Image (tube, rainbow, N blue to C red; front, side):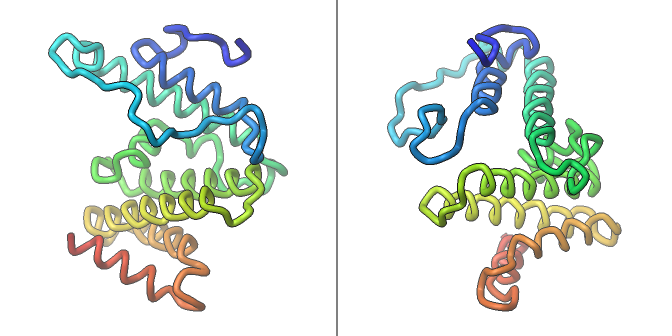
Length: 200
């Protein structure tokens, strides 16, 4: 109830996604808390695809609703960040194009979208570590691996698709921050993973 119930408003044709994001925003990530969301290892439902699927019939509205719900969720997290003046991501950075690039780096429209996407990604990682207690456990290691993988993908796309553009180098620099502490005092392991991704 506190999350606002299942409703087509404000996200028509993306009601599930909107509700999950609103519920996640209310959760306490502290281990042992009664209010947590998690992924289960078991497959409990299957999705049937056909020409009458809502996602096919209303693809444009659904994409817009999904982007709007994601933007609202990220802005809600930004508002919880303390102190607000030390923000590395400003509300103006949380654009639909940046969130699209975060979800689908190879479909990014501009290097600036990739730069904003990696800034959002690093903020989400920081907030997860801060609110979740950062105990170095399995969940934190999984999040780190996911962040490094997505950051590498964003950097690879910036460098290969938008060669020579200044904002591509900003994505590269942001990616390097994800590699601190990886592979010892230098970034050798991280650079190898990036170049391997660029070759594939």
